[in-house]
Image (cartoon, rainbow, N blue to C red; front, side):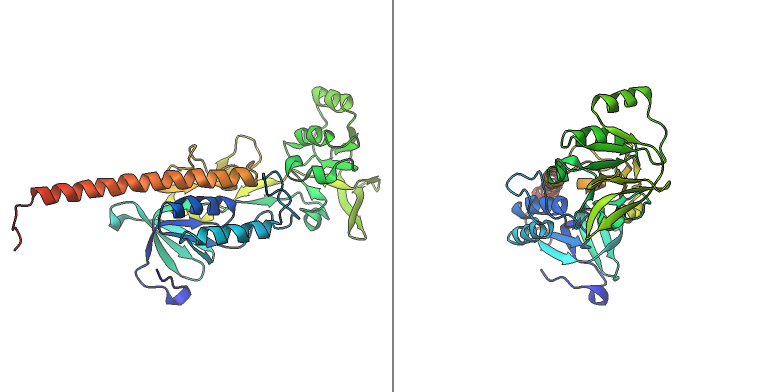
Length: 338
C-alpha cells in the first residue's frame, strides 16, 4: 500500500482500517494489536514524546531504565513487522466523512496531506504546564520531577524539595518522604497548610518553608538549592513540582470532542469508557490524553485494550456488511442481470 505526503497526497485520500494519531507507547500498543489482527494501520507521529527529557523509563517490567527513544524505536520496529505503516507528521484536524455512511473519517496533516480512516485511535498525550519559576523548565526531567514512581528511586536519600504549585503537592510531599528523610515543602504562593496538613507534615518530619520561591540555583550542571524571594537559600538536590496536565486534543475539536477537568484536579482530559471509546462513535483515545496519571506501562496497556476494542468493532461492521451482501445474493433470482 503506497502512501504519499504533502502536496503529493491524492485528492481522494487513501483509507485505512485505522489511523493512529500519536506514536508513543499508547499509540504503538494499539497499532501492535491491530496489526496482529491483520488490519491496515497507519501511525502518524509528531515526534514529541512527553518523556523525552527523562534519562530512562521506569516501572516498566523488563524495560526498567531503558532510554525512552530506544523504547519507541523498538516499538516502531515491532509494529512494522505486522505491516503497520509509521510516518512522521503532525495531524491538525479530523472530520467525519458522512458520505461514506459508515462513520469514516478524514484526517488532515499540517503539510496539507489527507488520509481516510474507518476508525481513529488518538494517543497524542499531554503537555506538562510547569510552574513559572526560573530554572524549573531547564531542569525538567533531570533533577526537577513530579512522579515518585517514575523517578523517585533515582533521588532516594537526597535533599528533596516539593514546590506547592498544585493540589497534589501535599500528596507528593508524603510520597517523597518514603524515599528520603530530608524533605521540605515550599509553601510558595499557596495558602497556609490546614491544621490537618500541618499535623501530617510534623508527624512525618517534613519541613515547611514559607515564602515565595524565586528560582532554582544550579552549579556545575547540578541543582544545589532553592532561592526564595526574600533572598533565603535552601539547599536541595532535587525538587518535585506538580504541573498542570493539558491534553493534546486540539485535533479533536472538529469532531465535537472537548477536554473536561480530570477528577484528580490535575488538568484536562478527553473522557472515554474503559476501552478508550469516546462520545463520538469510531473514535478511541488511549494514554495520557484520557488518563493524565497513566505511566508508560499503563499507557501501553491502554493502547492494546483500545486496539482490541477497535478490531472487534470493525469485525462487527464487516460481519453486518457480509450478512447484507449474503442476503442480497440469496434474494437475487438465478440468471438475473444476464
